[in-house]
Image (cartoon, rainbow, N blue to C red):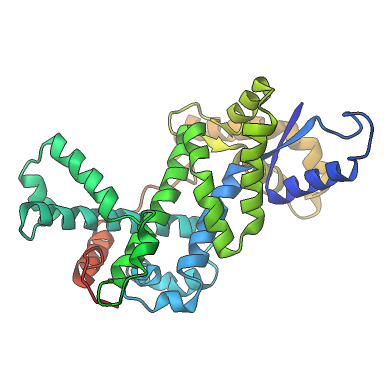
Length: 343
């Protein structure tokens, strides 16, 4: 068996090639030994794009005071036009992460005020030194009240006087953000079972926003792994244990195999692939086995001469002021509070 990792196009080509040889007599001639394993890095990018398609791309989704683009206008004032048109993965990933953090903090503030029957800030809540049991019970209450659940569609069937459309939008945003956080966390930690448990939720989201190919591939992956390959537990384990890798060996640093492929492509084609007339296919193929050596030489030289800024990884942005401004806006519009009749 040969496991082949790649993006959606790679999988479609492999499956099309195997389908064209379906009438052959032997498994070898049918190329049954080739098994496509979906690239999770590209899946993660598709999830971020799905949230953009649902929450930002439609113009009707930008009119609400609790719309995602309204929050983006506070977090990234100079990038709203870019995010509305074509944000790219990294920018959208940070939007989901940052808005989600502030929104959940605002939910905690609302819940703390409700619990103590007083208007409290998170600082006031911390000064009261709540017990761990209280925090745990409040977190369960938060998950029940501030995230869209299976009964959410029944809520939308009520009359306008009984509904709060602003709060409904926030419930949906929380659901999308937490599904994305779940996917990201389980990928980083290498928790395959937890990762697979989130796939069906994304299947429905992909179908709803028009990404039908990703939905079909997710369903196919689950069907093949849990039903088609059930008589072959060794193959099941091989697929699940090799869908992620950890290049650094550090906890929380698992990556999709396709991420590692893209990383190698960067070094092969851009960094050590030559320039101008030397940037040829022959040179790239000739020097491809040496990219790790080139990288180690550069790193050792930087360490030897104590060079600063020898990495492209920047320090985390200082977002306390920005987060506070977004939190004040959410508090002003009471985004996470239920107000009957609000449209």
